[in-house]
Image (cartoon, rainbow, N blue to C red):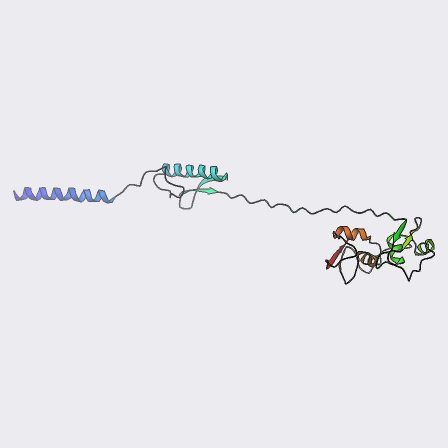
Length: 214
């Protein structure tokens, strides 16, 4: 009787112990398609593939970016989304239409100009310029005074003064004008300086510290 009772108790204990062991072990939760995009990968390989595929599709739909499913060094499948590199907007360099100067038949003297300066600029011989204006005193020119410019003459030699090579940057001094600065180079036309520097008043350079000389 006692022996039978021991066997029954042993059998009950074994059953209880086995039931406790099976309760400790757990299975991975099944894939739930309602989980959000931040849900970690888990479950079987098929579950992981389904989750990764649905995540990739969601990313493509939202961001319209190339996406692929790869395995990391641990063998886990992950979704890789490439971020396109923004294309830089090219800087448009404004173009300046070159001026084709035409020698005028007459010219009104501007501040800072001399007869030699005008002869170099208009490519005429200085003596021919003087001869075309017999009443002009070269050392006593007046602003606004009008002179005649010969049309069939040529400056002998190089018209550029040669002190400052071009292109150049000119530091504007007090009371300087575009016409005076052009005379410093000899063969530079004031209209070129005005155009390249977008100057409104060639006789007022108070708002400029430097000018580009083409």
